[in-house]
Length: 208
Image (tube, one colour):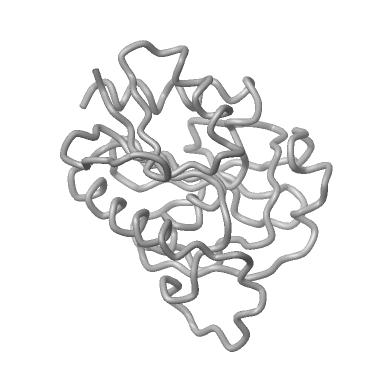
């Protein structure tokens, strides 16, 4: 049995678990509702959610009003768990807010409010076009990317794998020279077309 640590909102729990149910031998632990012992974990999944709390951002914040509904308790857990995972070389999959957490934890910064990426039709429909770097393993022509913050300065050791085809907002990153460390601004848990992304993550977790 291999174990994956995460903190998942109630509204997202079922979407993520349906992918795990396809892989016997994998167990998902949700720190929002149960204790998680990092010593027993084989991978880390950082999911979508509210904006990162101001104290964790590595940038000047002249106006904190764009930061919506921060959850300091969750941020404390994620910013504590991520270094453990990276130091141990364990697989990390970071989704939406998690994509931003990964960047910030490695010294990057965020645009605290952007336009045109939080429209209702973007939430679950795969309509936003992407363009990819030559070394991107996972390539989706259209994604369901709904967010109002985005990556600005890139964190140390990160490489961009995909941008929004309309305005070059960063939509996918990976950790350079790392077994599996992927951040995506879109929501792969919301559609089965992203199954191969989860399968890649699971394969690396099961190898640990």
